[in-house]
Image (tube, rainbow, N blue to C red; front, side):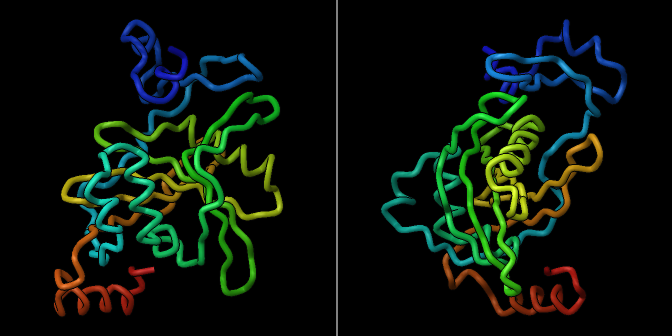
Length: 219
């Protein structure tokens, strides 16, 4: 029940209606098997429905595409096989572990769907925790906070870049990068990728993407 209300299900109206305007209740970990209600700004961490979509040649193995479901594991597989984290962040990334479950001091047990490590052209190292949501599920602020805390606790020498992945319509995958802004979690950048057969990417598409690059909007 605690898991559902922290990550998947809205709190009952009798609780949500006690929150002031533009604020909402969340349940934060407060140690091993301890939790507390806290009020935070009601900022949805959802993909922008008006964002332009970038086509990417689908490299998902056929047998995976044939039998994949539409849940978080299928989303993570498509992100991994198509190197979408590398494309989104512009660095070389490698999947380190799925469903990393551990404990963080003063927070208790935390779990991230998948964790990547990466390196850029200057040699800087990164840790990229990824939370994935399929269907109508929404990304949880609590999960992003836990990912950031996990990275600070377990891999403090690496640069943490938390990512949210969300299935959208027509094989579109939204990727969002988050950061802590004081007491808030905010979206730093977002891209939406559509996995398509290679011949579905037209000359017009490539011209448009090149124009984005020259305008400084494609990075």
